[in-house]
Amino acid sequence: MSNRILRTSSAFFIAAFLFLGPEFGVVTRLNAETESASYYVSPSGRPTGDGSLGNPWDLQTALNQPSSLRPGDTIWLRGGTYRGTFISRLTGSGSAPIILRQYPGERATLDGGNSSGDGILTIYGAYAWYWGFEIMSSDSVRVSSQVGSNPIDIGRGGG
Image (cartoon, rainbow, N blue to C red; front, top):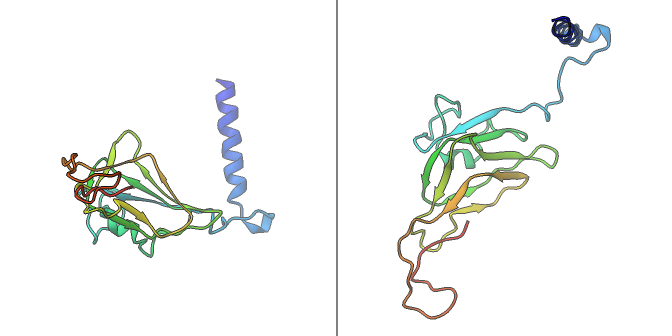
């Protein structure tokens, strides 16, 4: 019990010390590039959403990097299937990339279906990490009448 009280007291002391202010020589503001926010995307999200958990964006809106999205922020892909092809313009910085990743414990899938050969996820931005989600094509056409390694009658794009 005394260890628990000591740890709690130490944590309280550190927290109190950090919030005392600049008159005690302590920096009270974080570097803007180290501050980060979380935003959310859902298969049922909307372009008019604000990226919050209760009002998520659709995927393309998030990939267009709304003005509220800054270097170092994370976009969480909620579970479900995102149908279509997508273009990402996410641009973070070398020290603070934007992270697009699957929400913990959920499965997020980008399904290009028959994308007519277009890329399922095309990336034009920089300093962005794409992490832990699936990119696939549910197009059921798997046989080509053409010879060669790149038949054009099968419309699946890459990821």
